[in-house]
Structures are given as C-alpha cells and as structure tokens.
Length: 67
Image 1 (cartoon, helix red, strand yellow):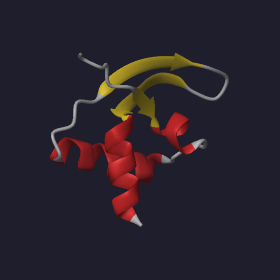
Image 2 (spheres, rainbow, N blue to C red; image 1 turned 60 degrees about the vertical axis):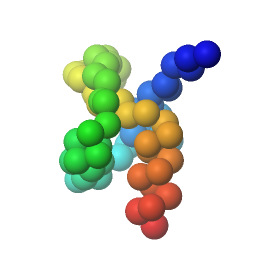
Image 3 (cartoon, rainbow, N blue to C red; image 1 turned 135 degrees about the horizontal axis):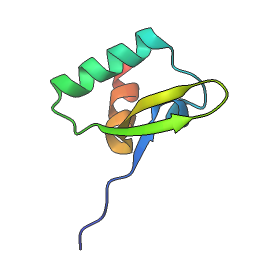
Image 4 (cartoon, one colour; image 1 turned 180 degrees about the vertical axis):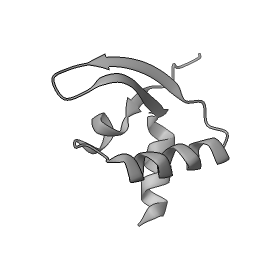
C-alpha cells in the first residue's frame, strides 16, 4: 500500500511566519538532503506568490535535529 506524502509550508508547520532567513536555511538544507520540494501559489492580504512546501516527516527530522 502506497501512502501519499503530506507537505506543509513553513508557515503551516510552525504556526507562524518563518521569515526569510529561516526560509532560506530550510530550503538549502532540503536541497542538500535531496528532498522533493513542492511549490504552491498563495494569495492573501499579507502575501501573494509562490511558497515552498516540504514533506512533514522531513520537517520533523530537520527541526528535531536543529535544537
């Protein structure tokens, strides 16, 4: 049985805006780990544009090892 990987943006994962520095750091780490990154377009009062989305299991790994 194949389960579909769930993706989250940093905003969805952290429950707050990540900021550009953390966003760049996470994107670089994901790229180095050869993680598949999804792109989604969002439009809201605070931001219009593309956001990067990462597999939840990788975000769990990344943030648990960052501390």
